[in-house]
Length: 81
Image (tube, rainbow, N blue to C red):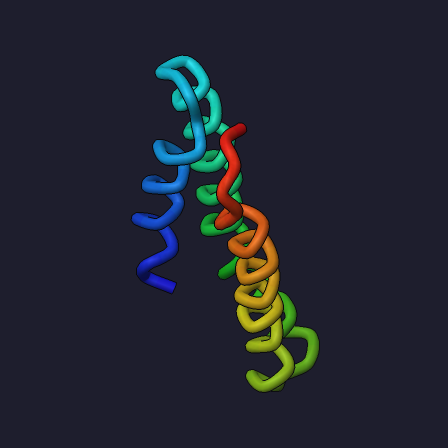
């Protein structure tokens, strides 16, 4: 997952057609990314507290990774926004 941030920054530049569009797209993607990064550890911890089982709690990052694959396939198309 460490490569996700640089790829997101690169796709922001490659998929937009102008400076103002790049700025807007970057603000949107970074705010969503930072929100997920801030909330995910608390959610995983809360699931562990309820279930007392790390296997159950670790399904959340796995689900997030699967979601990232779906978004990446859409973002990787050869089209500009």
